[in-house]
Length: 78
Image 1: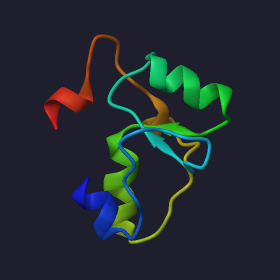
Image 2: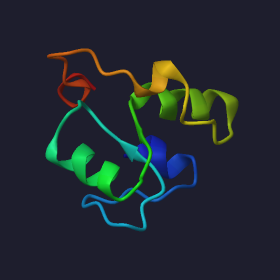
Image 3: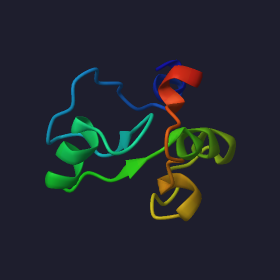
Image 4: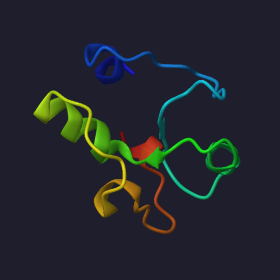
């Protein structure tokens, strides 16, 4: 949450159609399914960390940002 705010973005605890990107802890989930139905890009935490390092909004379509290892919940680890 703090990293999102430091980057100048807004953390939203509940998702809406106005979200630009959904940072997911794991996939599939009800929230990732909703994001897909609303055409909201879904990424893992690596995208946010790399955006911070580069200090810019990076493309969301890179494999390392959209892969979610089966059975791993990044939300519980971070």
